[in-house]
Length: 330
Image 1 (tube, rainbow, N blue to C red):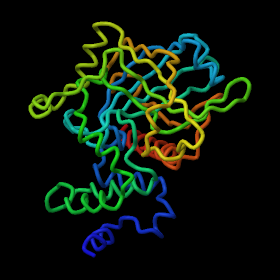
Image 2 (image 1 turned 60 degrees about the horizontal axis):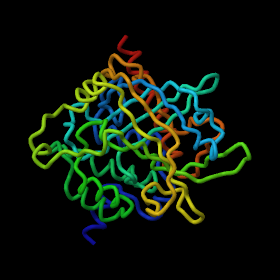
Image 3 (image 1 turned 180 degrees about the vertical axis):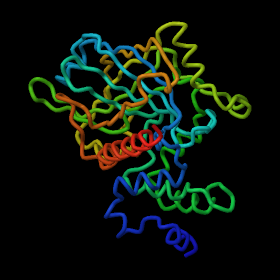
């Protein structure tokens, strides 16, 4: 009964409330209450670094999708690496996901976006769980920190948060943005020239290899190192990731990013992302980009994953708010 009382006092989801789902405005407001507002900046993944380069497909992807992304031509890319959360001074040792947003600038086409993070699953099966997580993370006015009882109550009542939490607890953060994989999280449908549909998820796998902070580095590392290491790494030479598709089978979940697919699914490498330059986001080309994951173009279709659908609205509203704040300052 004590747990139920905590949940009700915090406004966390009851069964009847969960069916209604939060609006984009409610989600953004919950994020702002959890992290605060930095005028003119993103509400989440606020701390980031820009990069540029190209993507070149190897021919394998054309079997599954007619998207121009898989033409084999070099496609210019604007990238943004980031630390999850809305606090611009959060230390880079934080056990939060790292993000990678990509905008592929297809010739004569609308851009194609991908918005990924460094965990293979997401911490919410529905927008309601994400909303409730933000409520639980809102700082207590008395301490300036989240209420431990609120966090405990959230975790106990939302099992769809457990897989991502377990991954973050057992895998130290990466040494560099360049030494992490990035995952689509959501399933998408690839449509080829014969109109054949294939359910896929994808992963960008680093050529530099997966490298994670040691326990010592995690405990004593500097607050800011991710951006500087990426700037230095791109000066040493191109940084590369392979784009690897995981092919779904009938019965694989397609609308729940908190659930991983079985390990035995077929994986196909379909191209390579090469980044050749990185800049602080204040000076880079990624600052104004909205990496809306529903901007896909012909050959790639979204599923009805409710989190994927909600992200598009939230990204748009976040951009509108920060743009209005930036205009007011001028």
